Length: 230
Image (cartoon, rainbow, N blue to C red; front, side, top):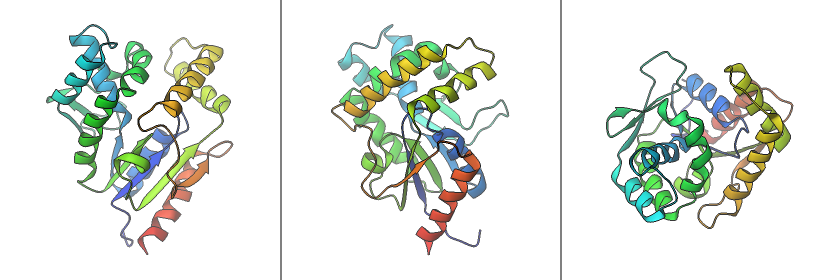
């Protein structure tokens, strides 16, 4: 690369705004690690369901979050994964993608103690550098001094349509109205929680992905990254 790009590129935004698709494409172009920080909360949720059988005991879930060691590494298998997700050395990349985890992750991610524990682990991984980090509070909480922050958004109807098509593409049964309702509920939880609510950082560049392709968004971010490195 002729340009020295920012070591950490933070991309925040609501569910299904295109963060993953854009983040993966961008990371591949830059040869960076793609790090979806939301998987951290999925790991804790999966561990809580497996070890506790429930997620509503905040103290127990928080204690669990403080104990587990999570790591994210470049993908070791060509099975559709964007990265390897490890919990205490065990590959849990696909276990954390179940509907049961999906249904409980917002509750777990709202616990202040869990967020503190995960923020510390996210910083540990991000500080290695050359990483595209996507999430909901990267630019505001995890790396407020990141050289480039992007807030990627899309209207809720567009985001629900994308999630609906994604599920159908995987051969799963999908109900658009249910997805839309669940997404509105998740937006409300994410944006009104007491700790690290979903909102753009004051110095983030806002990009609306309605009606434009992921490749077009990536090109916009690459231009921003070049300017940030000058």
